[in-house]
Every structure is written in C-alpha cells, then in structure tokens.
Length: 402
Ligand code: PMP
Ligand code: GLU
Image 1 (spheres, rainbow, N blue to C red):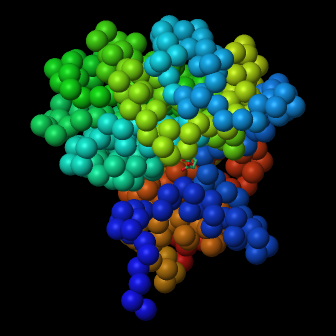
Image 2: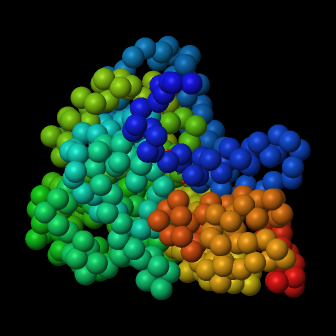
C-alpha cells in the first residue's frame, strides 16, 4: 500500500523503553502470567490522604475551568515557598511554569531553547526520555559516559572535554534516574568551575528525586555562585509525593526561558489539570515529615535489596544514595550461550528474565549504559525478595547448563 501517514520525526524516534517494558509486563499479567515488575519508576505508595482530600475539595469547589497557562497563582506561591524553605532559592511567580508532569516540562524547555544542530551534553547513564526529547527538538544529544567504577558520575575533566562551539545545554538528574547516584558539593563545584568558563551553556538540573535521598543531602547546582541566572530546575510531584498519575511538574529559572516555555505550552496544552494543581499545593506546603515515611521505606528496601542483588552471581553494584533504582553492571552475565540460549546484551538478558523468571527490568541500553540493567525497588520487600530469588535461580540454572 502506497501510504505513510507517519512523520519522519516519529519514524526516527524510539519508544520509551521504560513504558514499553511496563506495557509488556501488563500484557503478560493479563494473560495470567505471574510477573513481578521492577521496570516502571514510580512509588508503589498511593497518594497521601491529605493531598487526595485537597483534590476532592478542588472538584467540589468547582475548580473545573481553564487555569492560567503557568498554573494557579497559589500553586506558584507554594512552589516558591518550597524552593525557599528547602533550598534557600528565591523564585518569583514569573520564574515558574507548571506542566502536565516533569516530562512535559522538559519537552517544553527543549522546544523553547534548542535550535536544530545545537548540542546538549547528557551525562550517561541518563533518563531514557532526555535523548528522544532533545532529538525531537532537532538538537543533538552528546553522551558523556561514566561507569560504575566512577559511581556513574561524570567528572569535570570529561565535562570540559565535551564542550564545543555548538554546546547549548547540559541536562542531568541528581539524584539520578537510572543509577540513584547523587552529585556532592565538591563534584558540583568542579563542574561549576568548568561551566563558568562557558557562560552561554544553559544548565538544566532535573531534581525530581530531590526528596528521595538517603545518605547525603540533595544539593542544587543553582545554589552555586554564578549559576542561578543560567540554571533551570526541573521538579514535580510524581516521585516525592507519590502523584505520578496526577501529572504535575514544574520548571523554575530565568524569566526569558520561562516565557518561551509558556508560549509553547499555551499553544500545546494550555495548563496542567486544575484539580492536580490544587492537590499539589497541599503537598508542597505540608511539613516534609508528612511524606518522610515513604523515603524511610525506600531506604530500608534499598539497604536490603542492595545486599540481595550483590549476592547474585555476575552482578556488580554501586550502592546508590538516592532515588529508588539499583543499576547493577551485569557484563559478566553477557556474551554467554546458556543451554543453547544466547544472551549477548542486556536486552537479551532482560527478555530471558521476563520469560523465565517472570521479572521485568529495563536494559541499560535505554539509559546509555549497555552493560547494566535497571531494577526499580519501589515495591514491598517480600516482592523484591522473591524477584531476586527468581533471578538467581535462572542464572544458576543456566550456569549449570552452560
Ligand atoms: N525526570 C526524571 C529523571 C524522571 O525519572 C521522570 C520520570 N517520572 C521524569 C523526569 C518525569 O516525571 P513526570 O512526568 O511523572 O513528572
Ligand atoms: N520516569 C519513570 C521511569 O523512568 C516513569 C516512566 C517514564 O516516564 O518513562 O520509569
């Protein structure tokens, strides 16, 4: 048939591999298969009651109309309050825009500031959607690689080496999805020394896992001298407040950049949901202690899960200080033919584990780290324990055959 309705930009775009793996697990579960999904990065907790109550009140109070494009004024104030309280950063309403999830915030931003051919530095491992969003904007993702021997953190020398005449942006997350790595004060300071030599680079600091930090404080690069005016912070309600389905993210940064994002958003989606906005206010203004129970649970699971995963033959793990992922290097389990089954890369490994162990995980290729896999530990401990048992059993079985 001589037809192709689909645009080239979609033909060359990869499907989100985190969402693809979540879909595959759902499909297998619907067929009655016993699948443990460690694939999707979302808190297993339901949204706390005090936030849900605010959402219900918003419906009853008829907050059912279009809102200002950047979000309700009281939401902008709540975001501003939280920035000041938690990070000592001052943002006026004009410096903030709310969107349908941080994913849309990042997409707005890339469309608003990147020209075709611009280069964006993306320390790898990186969150899966960065690469595709940058490409959608016509720009070029430039990967900087850091393996587990560097605790998955790119150093200042690597950063300096990667900067060229076309570099427009640096985009990274700390705490990091997929590794859980967190930049320290001194590591950020070293980056800043390099960046100060290149004032035309916009820094985008994705801090959506800000609250999920166990062993060291979260530090924003925007707090360093000379960085505030050229940094955009990405954050949102999905992770720390267990509100993934509500779709509420936000950006804070220089007014010219925020205005450009508003223009894009005004044409694409107007504003995020009025109900989600009102619910988010309750979360942002609440005492942090009210959501700490989730962080405490993630920490206890991190500790147990790290021990368990380290004991799987062939898995090498850097214990992550934040987020809710483990990112073991499984190179030692690759390039094997196990009982006639070839496992050449992390994708083969994840397929084998999905089929034979009934455990869904995401191959590191999706995050720019081919020898690794991502395991989300946002699940009850007994589920995680069972997942590790199943993985170990399959590896031991094939090892015996191999
Ligand atoms: N940034 C990172 C690093 C993420 O892991 C995610 C995934 N939730 C997002 C942004 C987007 O989050 P959301 O759209 O749910 O706010
Ligand atoms: N950010 C989460 C993840 O990495 C949710 C899925 C997605 O948005 O890609 O799994």
